[in-house]
Image 1: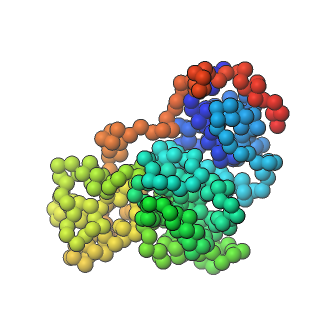
Image 2: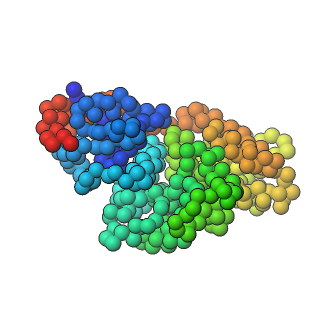
Image 3: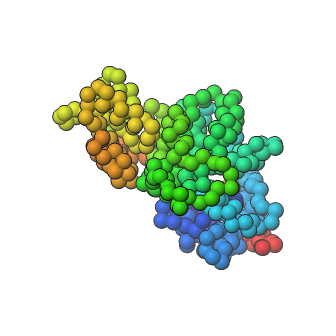
Length: 376
């Protein structure tokens, strides 16, 4: 048996994350049950009995080492339930950025990148002496050519926002990119919105060990852009758009084509004028910058417009229609046509070609056998 490019890339991701969840439908382009079963048979991965976690065996680390891919594994198997669950979430977040085409194997923020970079929090922690991020709850930092984003996965437990933000700005102080924002991730756009905007009753609130800020409070208090990005392919699609330079104007022209008209003066948070009467202000909301949408609606109302028009992806429609009912009309974008225009190719698509080493040979059963010493 010969190792494929897809299997090799999955082993790199697995050893980088240390623990990943069982495959989901949207993970099919990265890994699936069949691939995991094959790698388990070859002694490269281990699946927990409860079926929740996949881990690399020492043989996987040794195999990657032969190609100069150095990853540090656990000194002993991790058994803490909270740690394992956080690792699963961290892996799902990282896979979303990986599917978007971001470089996910960095351990520090560098110069302005050629493309998008996602720095996972576990890498930031391990690369800093003294571990200043030890008690923070962020999941990563997303770096584009224009903006640095602090990434969170929303939940009812909340975050230490002022501490997170202070350390974030201290960490990126020497970066030439000074524009910043927040990305709130979750299983779906609607779920993120419910966590942010639903006021939990006292009986629903879990006891907090520490005095954290709720995500709803953070959203209300911050002046930074806040993007709602779901886990999975839809989220990856959004992240690809966000990473494009001047993506708002570019998307507006691609979506409206010959009907495109520049936005009205005094409405900088909108992107165009809707082509049908009464020619309302329109905003491209593929990035789900909720703060910007709120500002656009308020500014349009101040100029005498009853509402605005939002152009959105299919996954975003339900939340936007409910949240902005009566204040905005929501129109679904033809994503297939848009992706074709952009010439989009997902990095996570199946790569069934054999993986070739630096010496130009394939990795086969003999290599697996050599690396399977001490299989545990």
